[in-house]
Amino acid sequence: MSALFNFQSFLTVVLLGICTCTYVKMHFPALLEHRTGFRGFFWKAARIGERLSPWVALGCFIMGVQIIFL
Image (cartoon, rainbow, N blue to C red):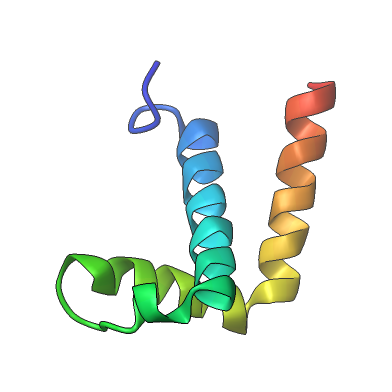
């Protein structure tokens, strides 16, 4: 089943996207300096990861535990 129809898979893709964009912005800030267009979406995801990092980290932890044990 694709991530569009399965909420757990969709949430996994969104959380991993936010974490990846935040990591890329921390290490290579020039890649995500444009706030408009296609790369603007990734800039916004990185901003969410920066601002809500305790909540994003908690979500990633819960997601990881759920994938491993359930």
